[in-house]
Image 1: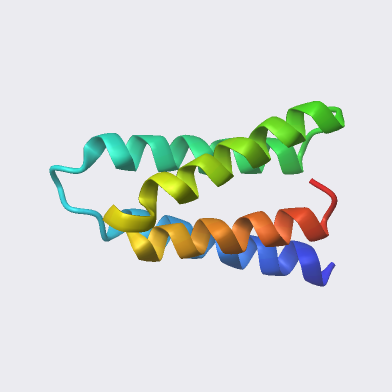
Image 2 (image 1 turned 180 degrees about the vertical axis):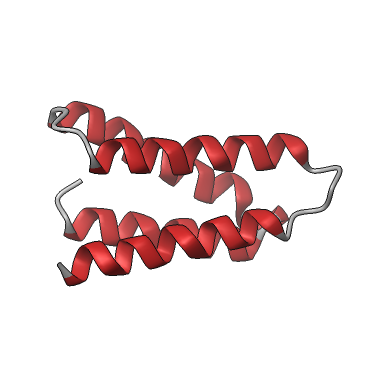
Amino acid sequence: MSDKKDLDEAVRNLRSQIGTLDVDDEQTRRRLRGLVEEIETALGSSEGARAHEKLGERLKDSVLQFEVSHPRIAAVLDELIDKLSKMGI
C-alpha cells in the first residue's frame, strides 16, 4: 500500500509541475497530461507486461526530452519511473 501512496504523491507532484509551466507551453502541458492519464490507466488495468513496458519507454523518452528544458519535470518523471518499477509496472 505504501508503494501506491508514494506513486499517488509522485503523480500529484507531476500535476503540480504541469501547473507551473508557462502559458505558451501548451504542447508540453498536453503531453504531460497524456502521460499522467496513461499512468493512471496502467494502474487500474490488467494489461500485459508489454503495454506496461511501452509506458515505461515513453516515460524514459520524456525524461530525456525534458532534462534540459524542464529539469524539475524530468526529475519527477524519473521518480515516477522508479515507483512504477517497484510496483512491477
